[in-house]
Image (cartoon, rainbow, N blue to C red; front, side, top):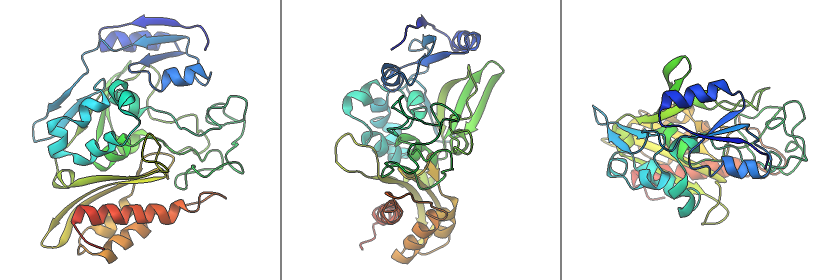
Length: 329
């Protein structure tokens, strides 16, 4: 780990101003990802700005039944909050299937949105990686790629987005509230994370100096009736091979509205409008769910070791929809 300057701030405005003044500054809250990457020299900020004193904590109700989750709310706190449990169960389930209890007690919501890939080549500074060092190459293409993405990849990067929380939030129509040197703005979560294209080092729409303030979730029938299902190699502390966040509003046996997002298979949290279109207006049935699963994996590009993720993701999505609808196979 390299030497760095450490600062603390008590207001969001000061935090933005401090970061804007130092091109190599990073914010720190729980630090569960940033400190990890600093220890292995993937991250080497010149200044680390502690934002834990900012008033960005907790979960609160919004007019209309939605909720606002502060950027500094801890994952464990959000997972157990009554407003989340009653109105957005998929989010609670995704959080409880993430990391370990110790990490969930420490990690913040804002930081979790920005967690970086677990691709082993990204984390090994001795090997080429376009995401870590643009233009150096992608070691995963042609290398070990069992855990890599099959959707949203490019010739420059196939690294999988690792998180669970953002997958559930994507299916729940989350909106990210941001403060920066040019003022405040909001970004729909489905537009927050970027596919790699030719610039895999640019992972989100955040500009330098911008700070996540909160995440808003709107109320909806498909949010109340939502579910998160995760498939992984072991039941404890493991990233997803595949996962599915689904929400459905079903009336008289037909799907009125639906939300589908997939994890473990995309270079970002993978919202699937194709799967949602295959569900809406259709009867609740095994055939409808299978059609949605086929639609969700449209355009998938497997590598030499991860073609299994395509049928596994389809089965994961069908199982999640079946459980949510109470349909027995």
